[in-house]
Image (cartoon, helix red, strand yellow):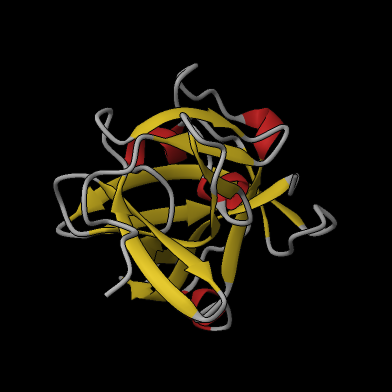
Length: 169
């Protein structure tokens, strides 16, 4: 499991006092606000203190420690920010996307393997798992009628396949 997870990408500056616009790659502003420390790398070697975060339209506006001018903020444009998974609290039934990717998807009744999760998409109503097997992609909705069990420790997602979902053309 990855210890340091992407929370967002700095897309631009905001104002002249060092604030920046962040495209969130985490669950939302409440997740981000619970973090005191962010990182500029996925190894946790370059840390920075998060001073403030608020939403403005679809982006977060953040302030980082010791970034007080537009010039300093400008230098960080395009940077990815990470968090230490141990610094965040998530619901017991929630999973990080990074932990879902790579999980094998199997039929809960027959143990038939359908492939691996290669991406998790979301177009509004629910997450959608992109399952790849031998170069073929199948999209499955991450709803309780389909996804019956997720075990990221053993990298297995057990599903009840809907009729026609994995049937051959």
